[in-house]
Image (tube, rainbow, N blue to C red; front, side, top):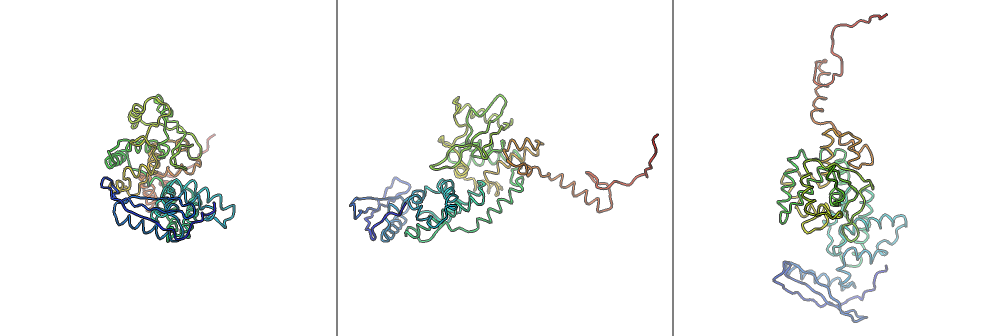
Length: 412
């Protein structure tokens, strides 16, 4: 769409209202009249401090003096991007438009599209990009999504809504390479044992508002099934078979236009996942709570809402809790690494582990089969024995030990 023609030098009326019964007590409001239609319009926002409310009014007055109405200046990013898309993307080749459009629609809008353009900061963009990396988006996907955001925010600079472009972030390529390196050794990201998992789930529940037990149940279920948080959120009653204790994993909850949506699993692969004894009581308890509706969700938030990795992080203060427990590296996706590592150490055959994980490539599953510490120590001892002259060492011998000479004999 073409940019709307806005009268330059529009005048704003403004006031600040104090409301003692609200957490954000100061409500700032501006009013203006369209000089053509004479229609009166207004915009408002609440703040905790009077100074912040006054700064908001002053900023809108400066913007209005440049010819941008407060209605445009306070637009959510998603709405502004739709209004100004053609201007922001002018000059791009058609083959570039498709990936930019997909990145904007599938990544930018679901992540930060609800935030007003003037409230988007570099920190918000940083967290969005790192979230895409954590969700295992490809490097080109991250690049195209960020490039689309940069262009939209650059248009906001030209419109005078913001002074500098907060989307011009640096360093994300290094973070992406680091994430790839970590995935080369996913075992290093796993929790050590069941006690560590229990300690984590308990601490997350204790830190959450109202100490909602469901957060701990989600964490334990994800780790013991090697599932993604979105896949756990997508579990329905009909997917669980309590006779065989199998989970028919066929959907996930993920971000989409307008919020969270349900869709097929990553790679569109359905798979069957065993429910081990340690979580069967948990599953029985959830089945009893949600009732017999086959489409009822097994796991929800305290108000019945769908769960995403971001919801789990924010509701449980995940980043704070894992640091306090000494698990600074731990992300929500590492619960999946935990489950697959435990299964590999338990001796689950490679082809079975691949089916449970839903991996497309066998090499991805093989990363969980690294030798344990004991095997590594035996390998070191064997090498030391070889270098020291062939003394007997634990484990397989790389050179035969000397013994009595052997002679060939003819068998007739």
